[in-house]
Image (cartoon, rainbow, N blue to C red):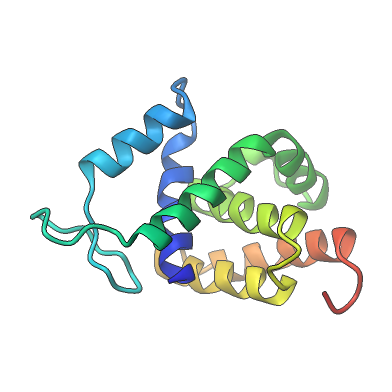
Length: 152
């Protein structure tokens, strides 16, 4: 359930980049125009028979709203800890993944750091390039060490 929620959140966060619309408009547009299979990958469906489960939708929206609410802090931390990489030079999928996982590391102490990082890596294998997992891992490891005591 959480993997699917994270994947949906990634898609919404990706779509938020370079938009001047409110988070509510983006969420309404996303849920109104896309339907997904109730499986791990959340593949789009052509028909509207299989809505996203309420708990998955709530989890995904919580992540998206959290990223949106803390975007300035998250982006500053990513930029500070990514050597020789400006945010505007990063691949959009990579940046979206970093924002999602950084939010969980910074603001969701109930999510173990290893889970947030591993989920980002695994999702990056599906949606990113061959370099995404190692790139995301390197930056998220630095974020984790800077904001979480050892072992959390």
